[in-house]
Length: 200
Image 1 (cartoon, rainbow, N blue to C red):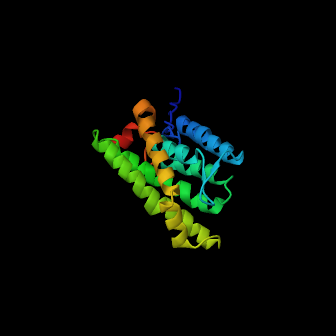
Image 2: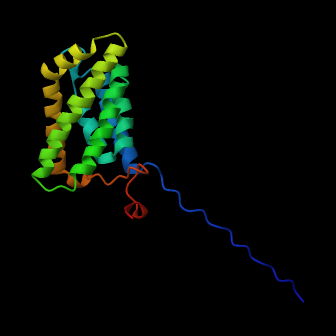
């Protein structure tokens, strides 16, 4: 009489989803790498010191909207590293990216022209209530410029107008010409694209 061998069922661990998808990693590499190289090569137009005009505002907002806050933070860090004032840009770019991502989730379900109106107002508010104040404040922290005079000079002396206009135009064109690419399908909870369980 043979002995009965019991087969034990080995539990299969659930498939682990990556925190960032391949698309998001590609966005960080492409946008962040482009902005890093552009600034490191000094391809800028000087504005009111220490501000310069380059493509970093554009890649920051596009990356945050299309890829989500974690992509935006990673891109923002890469944009800040080659800066002449990296400590200020480390507050400026990643912080702005989080707010741009929040804006993207809010405006995307809206119908036009409401979507465009809310988008324009949101970019203006983010730039004037967070981005430029945080940059000017960090300059003060490191003893490079007084806070409020620096903020007022940069925000209302022309620099703020230029930055804001460039971001609004770039984002509007990207949404218009590549809506599927710009659609914020990412998840706040996981960082990656929205999975079925995230939709529940």
